[in-house]
Length: 217
Image (cartoon, rainbow, N blue to C red; front, side):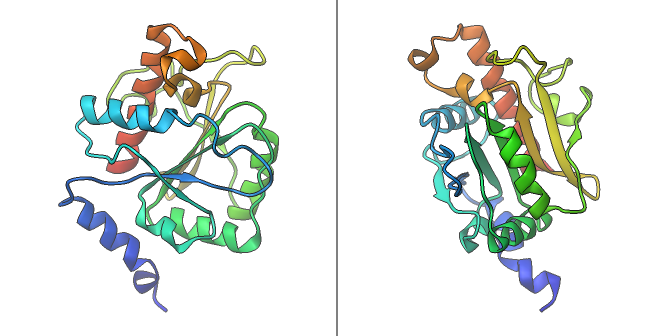
């Protein structure tokens, strides 16, 4: 089967999105015991913010997909979060790889405690690639709102600087892994963490940057 035929459903979906009144993004439901469902208000809040501020037309409630599902090819943007263990089996790793190489994008937000497990599993998806730290002048930090210092710090965990780590395919960022920032906590409704409004705004603005970058690149 040719590459074009193999990935035609995703190419077609992306093309149709140009004429759609509302797109959908997805939340990844993975195995391993980690709480993939953490931060239940974060994505709806981010979507509402993006729709109101950067002109997206996203359905407010994200869908849930598993890494081995063929359904992931319907969604140009997938979000993943959690605190603990992550496991991808061989089929799931291959499916995620095919999704990302055919035009998909995944943002993984470490909710604290995920990094040690995730980095091992990403070796199954891209054994030939390594996570690279994005410089502060990468376009993702200025696609809608300007973050000249790079990824903002939202929640403190280990007194370490925030990091935006990525995997690239032919200079296209296909995977973004945000660490020591906890953007998802900042997207949650105000009463969940009682963050100052300026902190929540930074988190939402950075989230909007990620969405805009993913849809335009």
